Length: 419
Image 1 (tube, rainbow, N blue to C red):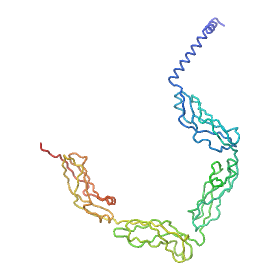
Image 2: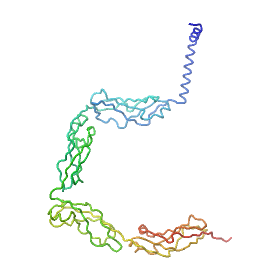
Image 3: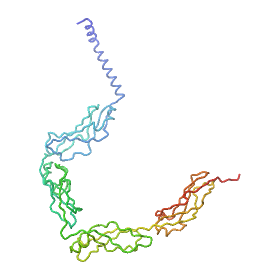
Image 4: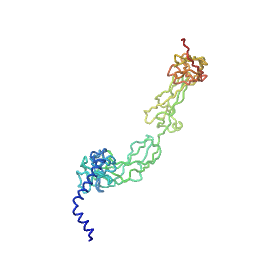
């Protein structure tokens, strides 16, 4: 060893205590500086966090321990504390190596490696779970027709592309599980193929959410055909009479129901050409649209099925349009300043009204008003469109009103005052 190296070693040995004290002091000063610029804070995280349950493959978590999640208390530098995202915090309940039945599991939290800080507390810090061994079983699929087609139609037992399915879940639940496919045939008139959802239900018909099926849908075919001796007829509304003058019958909306089922003499029914008329509906006094319940006018030998059935028919009544002209209506000025005088050219207008004739029959020239608004105008000359209306508001809404000429020349001049 050289003399120089020996001197350095002696220096370090003689001053080691001072060197260590200096480094400690420098580190302390750095910590104070960092702490002042980014202090350590502690508090509850602002968002409730979901709990991740780690469940073994052969175990089923039977209960739903908590739907509210957990609240954690964090300690971290302020900059990190205020920027932590929910996806950077994981809360787990590890269910591995637990016995079946009711168990209490401790929750553990972990921060993303990029986060400086630590989790101080978790509320709740434990959850109670109910564990059961998982089982699988092949279950038959029951076809349930929830709504039957009309009486005139019939069908054999529906056929589906599979007849059983593998169900997985708690063994105790599987013992009481049934699998159903539910078919609604209420609007079916012909053979049909339906793809519908599978349901797992208990003996009471309540859907079981803890059973998983290997498939969620199946396809079933149903050979719906018409019964012998029953016929479907379209309902046609029949009216009689003519509405009062100024009104017009505009037809009927589709009746409710629009078809009926009949039975009886087949030859007579075929002669009806697929149509069943209602008894006549009187529209001779109708001045507005209305609905009426009527029966079907069937020939002798033909009966309704079911026999007590009536039809709701919406009848549409309109009005005939008409036109009337009202000449030389004076113009009313609105909003004229007290220090202005107004000259109108022309001072009178013609009003043309297109409306249902019954509305026109009620109108006189006294029911009309023509207004010219000058409230926003100063002295000068302008071209302004007058506005005409009917004083009776309910009639005004039914009319199309035109003013001739469409624009009026307006000259506003200051009123001279004597000094």
